[in-house]
Length: 534
Image 1 (tube, rainbow, N blue to C red):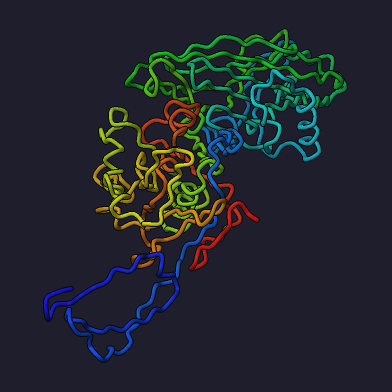
Image 2 (image 1 turned 45 degrees about the vertical axis):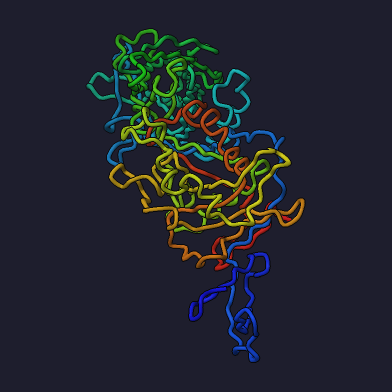
């Protein structure tokens, strides 16, 4: 009842209004005594179609933790020798030579990546696989292609600085030289870092490929001993090498045994507010018993830029550690435990043009640690307050949001945002603080909610009470169970970021992957998918 001449309204519960339907109504007035005898003309209104319908299973509170190591793919590494004007492995073309006695000159050279024939390379790979054992530092090293340096957050497998050559020349009376023989070696360097220690190891595998004798006098220019010189700087000490297999070979073509050298490095100088970047340098030399000096040295380059090692106590003063900080690790949410939160993150990453955290789009997530660990002293909670103000879910979240009181008796509706609040990608991170997607409020984000249709069947829907998304937004906000929301990121810090083995610091980049959604198509106007795939 309203005063005469004033508009009246009736609120219809959302459960009676289905998306994609048109409804008609008409009215008849009543003044408290008499009803109007005629009805008004019919009027219609339309509930827009859903543009998001992702069908999901029940959350499994007992689901096992995600094995994150399985998702860390080797990435190609660049280092100092990658100079188009120089040969692989040293700063300039040419050999490094010294007197080997008896009118002989011995020279060291690092060859081009393509110097080995395909047959030789295949033979090397087979022999390397057969010689590796449980003591191998990097278990995946034999699975990646040769001619490239590969790395993960705490491991590296370097196959580019190969082959290595030892050239023996004979000096003639007229001052000319002739090539007596050539020794060719395959070289693989493996590095294993420890995210909870500043001591780390390197392993150098040296494998003879062939010995070529040009004068039929192979016994006269051997044996050959190869010596590695691996160093690190600054504030870094090196011990070793410790050998498995003796690094001396005859040149009779039959001696092709492998030799493996292990070095141990320890970085120092880190404190709770600083980091130490360790640069490594790789050199080697080859000599005969009569070589007079170690001038016959070959340079295999340095670790700059991708394989420099970052050691610090910033993340955890009690557990200093080292990582290859240029490697971008991959974070995978636990779909079985929190399917709705994972679906929301996948939707926003896949559908929006900024694609936060997408490896495919080349848009990494940038980590924002707690206030005293980031350069802007920005509390990630302030980002969340922009997108998800306190009480938003209870006041403004979709009324059909389902809570899981069967799992958490005191569960309530909660606001979930993506990109994560603890990232520079968050819509709440100010542009003045290097924020990538600043918005004034979460109202500018894509709006969705998670609801249980029946036991065993959940859906993530867009919020049909408001205008549909344009898909030009830069963030997502979803109403869902608080238990699902908080549980979805509960292991992020301890298992992955600052306290985990990937040792993320301020502004470190990482990827976010959703393997269960690989079959879903986000390119269509309506995003409709069943996960896991039926």
